Image: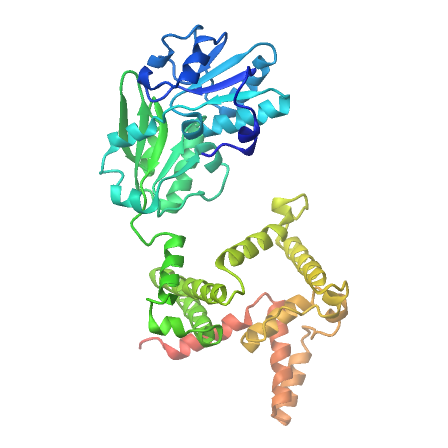
Length: 461
């Protein structure tokens, strides 16, 4: 809930067309001198806290603000084009009305209107006191600090922008019933439906905090709710916790074995953990699959830690690289490109990969001369053959060289192998058989893996 750059750059002194001031938590004695003076000279006053005790000496009867911060900003800026407008908010504009502050600053800057901001005493610390240790463990708050966000920002995403290892405070300004339902679904992704929450309410003359759960948000937002407190999950549920543990293992006071590892020494474990994850997936053993994904993720973070110590790259570079790549290669989602079928998506994906390689190599022909670049040599041969066949069929010059799935080829190659059973004849037979399977929509690698599983674990008789 930080103010935008626009808010910081606009003037905060003089005789502005727009004034945004903080009323504090409720005690008129906490009102700042500049805020009190602005209230006394206000000709047109709007507020999000009707009945606030500090509004008593105001020179104008306050009008209630709409709930939507963007609607408020447009309304106030339009009115300020003709006369000075004062907006009084509960608590502090920066800490308790950041969504409104950001929208108002941008609208004012766009309209060329000055904006003055008078700070106030935040109201949410008193609301947190009403929650007590039951909802916000002091030790947790002291260790991690408090993160803030706006409901409007969160519900615009598909994954909550919150660290579950830290307690969070969500500004509910403008939250509709539909938005609350979406917010509950997003929080369930990161915290689970049973995770406790606290509605922080502002009322006159008192304040209150009501307990609920993520799933309980479906019952609706209680009247007077201004903020939602999201306690942290127990330790070790955060991406940052994993990064810290791995860094500690590599630190001088860490683990002797972990400190000795290099990219090369860790290579076997990277492959081993990937295969173990696939094995758990094949068995549809979801607890085991969850565990193996953790082991695989450890390898990613451990390699990144080794790399940052060597000055090669950091975990942030890994995250930025894959996130940027996903956005670049999905222009039909994040851009203007159309792709209505999965096949069109794959065609676009390959074209974008080729363009990226060409730009990286500094030669426009690099991707054309080596269309199979990027097929890992370390892959199992059967899986690698499938990938090369799939990529090759998208390149006209290569497609003509690939085996055709006709009925006569397999018997002929089988007869050749039987007559001359050497590796070359076997390779041609396997190559043709893989192509035939792919044409029929079959996964040759998975088919063979299934047969091996049946061999290793025969049915009981």
